[in-house]
Every structure is written in C-alpha cells, then in structure tokens.
Image (cartoon, rainbow, N blue to C red):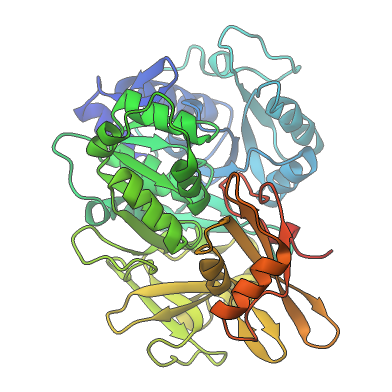
Length: 516
C-alpha cells in the first residue's frame, strides 16, 4: 500500500510536539494536526464516504487546509482542491465534473465570502451530499441549515485511525488546470506521483542542520505550494508558516519573526520583495537565516533574479513543472552548477525532450515543444479519454510549452505555444521581448502579447509597469526597443499600467491583456 498521508503519520509519530503549522498566533503541532485529521477521516467514513470517492476542498492558506487534505486521504478518498477565487457557478462546475460526494469549505471573511458562495454551489449539485464548514471563528455556529461546522462534524469521533490501504496507482489528488483552452480539466495524480515528487526535495534543497521553516504564501490549492512546500515540508518535519494573502511587507515580517529558512514563490512575488520598503526588517539578518529560495510557476526574468540575489544574498533555484507533472519536472539543484535563465535539468526518474510538430527531436539549442516522461506524469484527465490521449501521445506528456535544451541538458522555457506571436511569418517569443524590456532603467514589470494586425497577422504589444517615480513615453520605449531587438521583434505598441492582472498564484493573466 501507499497513502500520501504517510507524511503526516510519520512526522506525528516522530516529532509530535514540533510546530507543524503557524498562522498568526495560532500554532498546531504535528500531533494536533494528526489528531484532527484522524477525526475528520473517521467522520467522513461514518457519513458514507468510501475509498476512491472525491471530496472537494475550498480553503486558503489556513491550518484547516492540511488538516482537511490529510484527513480526506486517510479516509481513502480523493482530494479535489479548488481555487478560492472561484464564483458559485464555477465551484458548482468543479463539484459536478469531479463527481464530488462531499465538500469542505472555509467559512470565509468579509472580503472573501467563500462559505456563502460554496453553499450556493453545493445547493445546486445533487450528487454532493455532504458539506462541512471550516470556520474562521471556532465558536461561531453554521449559518446554513444542514451544514455542520468542522467541530460539530467531527464531534465524538476518535482521534486515531489506520489510514486507508490505498495502492500506489490509486488517485490521491485531482488538480484542475487553469482552463486557458476550454473548460478546466481535472488532472488525476496518484499517491505514487505525489509521494515521489515531494520526496525529490531531498535532491532539490540542501539538508538543514536541524529542521526547516517554510514561509508558505503560494496557494496550497495549487500544485507548487502543495507538493514543494506542504507535502515536502511535512515529509521533512518542517514548520510551515502560513500567509493566506501575499504582500511583500507581510512576507518579510514573517520571515524575520519566525526564522524562515525556505521561501518559494512565483516571479511576481520576487519582484515585489525586491521593491518592498521592508520597514523594520533587518535585511542582512534575514538573508543570513534564509537558506533556500525557489522560483517556479512562470519563467523568472533575469533582472528579477539578479535583483533578489543582490538584496538578499541567496541564490534563487528555478524549476519547472505543471499540475499534470505533480509538478516538478526540472530543477536547478543545490548540488550542481546552476544556470540562471534556465529551469535546470530533469529531476531524478524524469526524462525531458524538445520536439517539433512531428514529435521529432530538434537540434540542441533550437526551440520546440517540451515533452516529459517519468514517475511524475498524471494518470490522465478525469473522464476525458480523448484529451488524455492527445496530451500523452507517444507515451510522452506534451506540455504546450516552448523551450530549448542546452548541451548539458538544462531546459529553458521560451513561452507557451499559445503565447507565441507570429508576426509576418516570423515567430516572436514574448518572454524574450520581456527580458529585454526589463533591462530598461524605467521599467519595473512587463507582459508582452500579440494583437491582431491586418497586414502582418499579429503585432507585438507590451504592457509596462514603470518603476516608482520613473517617467517614459511610448515613443521613447519603442525607439529604445528598436535599438535592442531585430526589426520583426520589437514592440510597436506599448501601454502603461499601474499593475498587471494576476491570478491567485501570482501568474500574470495575459488573456486579460489580449483584445477580446
């Protein structure tokens, strides 16, 4: 058997009194998290949840998330984590598409009425028979008839259980893709997928003298935070400091207060930390305690990488993966030379190729689609055999990302296939344009997209956020770009914005920048 909840079981047995999760003044030890997860598992089983059934979970980065996550797994059920920014119609879609039998939902706050939205969605889905409210206030009663709070739901259930004897190939988690093309699809990830990927942290992070403390501001419903911090952290008996909503100042304050040794983030978080005022934070002392900085989720601009390393004195290790790859596929390891601008070589047990439209390998250094094979590849898309067959054709997962491999096997991600701009028959890769624009002294952040053009098919447009106090005009940036890039590449259109649209994980939403 193999059950992903073994990470919590083992750590609770070996270090029951060590803080497992910290949020504000709330601290739960491994023993406490395990006892609550066990109670939840017993309660779910008592309500008729059987092994293999799906249980959806809507919860931000609160102590409820790992409790619910591992409790569902201990019952032998499948966790379906949902984005906390979904609206009732979207939540209902995910409950129906996953055939969820139960739904655990955070009650919410004034600015995030998640409980109300979750209840509206739950009421629309007949097949989902159980809803449990995860309260912000433990003493508050449930406002919804027939919907118990967590404490009411688990009352009188024992705090011990033998975790369900699931098999390595059984589905453990269903992660929904962002749905950039069509409706979101559920990637089925097995217990083996998730366990092996979390255990790769032994290769990826240098070993600590005692135990690590993570700052977890990546959403736990997303594969990056879930595998690389929560599961990896629980496996290594680390302490997780939870930050439900990222702001650079709050992140730096928590890093200093709790002696954080590992930080993981997406590029926009690193950009924000570079530009943070850091009032009251001793940056040299913080840098001395910080051992590991990890970037993923999107390509990290070199100017941002350099800026972070200069300010905090910590090498940023950049990796690459997708929900469908559990997620880590490549990584700049601590025990091998790092190559800034790349996402590293393939991790243990994983193979990566770059291919053309006929799935033939392209020459070293030439761009093509990144395809992956290994223990990390999903079982498939839930109830979508045609989409699964297309994504896994030839036995390799086709990522839809454009990349290059160098002579040492280090991968560089150029762009998404769908983001590539075809201007007058020439392929233009937005990331390349973004990297160049980021070197301009007035530019702080940039996103490049293609816009329709009657003559050329597509034209290049850049959306630019200027540095605070900086001044630049469209004509000036266009003229400067012309001196830095080939004629077919440089942006002819530049629009200045106060901020770029981002999703809950901090990824820039280019679809919102493209013309409707």
